[in-house]
Amino acid sequence: MILDLDIGNTLSKWRLKDAESSEIRSRGAVWTREEWRPGADIPDLDVVEAVRISSVARAAVLDETVTLLRRQVRQVFVAHSQPEALGVVNGYDEPGRLGVDRWMGALAGYQLAGGCCAVDCGSAITIDFVLPGGVHLGGFIIPGLRLMKESLKLGTRNVAIDPESEADALLEPGRRTVDAVNHGIYMAAVSAINRIYSEVCDQQGISLPMLLTGGDARVVSRGVQVPHAVWPDMVYGGLEASFPLTFAERAGKMSGAPRVPEPVSLEKIRAALAFSMLL
Ligand SMILES: Nc1ncnc2c1ncn2[C@@H]1O[C@H](COP(=O)(O)OP(=O)(O)O)[C@@H](O)[C@H]1O
Ligand SMILES: CC(C)(COP(=O)(O)O)[C@@H](O)C(=O)NCCC(=O)O
Ligand SMILES: [K+]
Image (cartoon, rainbow, N blue to C red):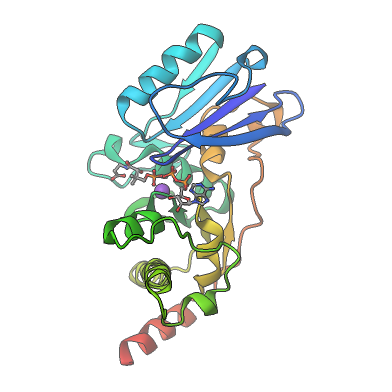
């Protein structure tokens, strides 16, 4: 079995992948913290022959995790942001400073779709752009839905946005604090994504397929107007591409990859942008 770990600022996600059949056998998530308890937090390591890790948590969390895993697992691969990999050139002035989850998303998105706009809706919402030639332009970082809400300190943090809510309902003015806050932060997130996408496509003169991932991807997806696909395993896709272990991975297959969304024409994007400026 292969254990894939995606350690974010809020949640540490894991999945177990069969090294022979490439099937995903199980998955889970625990709050990100310093110490892992094998058995309780993560699956029994006896069956694991390799681990692949993407971590943006504090260095101590990764160090502890790697130390623990190395005791029991033969191969431990830790992803790092690099100046260039798999045809993608990192757009950061200091490539190592790009969050490795963003780098994994950019690599996965590029491998799947060529150029892409990769959006990760987690603790932070990150929006990264990769052009068809593999040039990563850099990106945008805004607080995620939960962080935005917590920063207001209005006592509404425990009332999460219902992931089943329709975007239309979330875009109505709230008549109580919790709705005003939830609808406000939702509007802030989806309008930023819509606008940033349009601006960058306009600047670059190209319409790119958009891919969404992260804990809030599904609810954010409802408010994003541009055609896009939700890909919950996008960060894992970057790990698969960076450290291919199975037969399917060596052939370039990433588990759970969606169909590439057909982007709208650049003319439409530009017309929508021009229209929103007129209002
Ligand atoms: N069951 C859940 N538990 C915690 N957070 C959740 C859950 N479902 C959705 N979320 C949202 O997802 C975010 C965490 O998403 P995730 O992509 O795992 O973040 P990160 O990678 O930063 O840890 C939370 O901030 C919250 O807004
Ligand atoms: C921007 C992030 C905090 C997002 O992390 P997440 O929401 O997935 O926990 C992470 O990618 C990070 O720590 N990046 C380093 C700074 C940068 O990418 O510029
Ligand atoms: K994120």
